Length: 78
Image (spheres, rainbow, N blue to C red):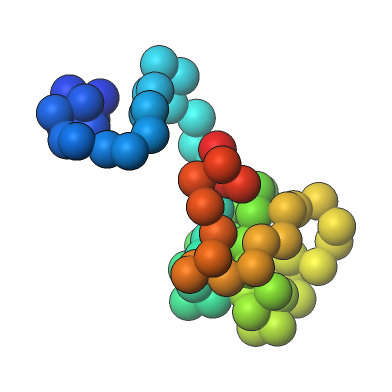
């Protein structure tokens, strides 16, 4: 269903959901804090430097640190 919704939009890039993994990229610190409170930081594969400032649990070096929500493109997190 999600694949149909995405393919019906005129997107400037290709989106494929053949293997819907459970990986999360947090571009907002509030999302990172919520994941931390839910004990779900293991699903987080990338976050911003601002997320690092509010949630020390992401500072273990296992995640990609992206610039911010305005300058991170799909090619960085896909």
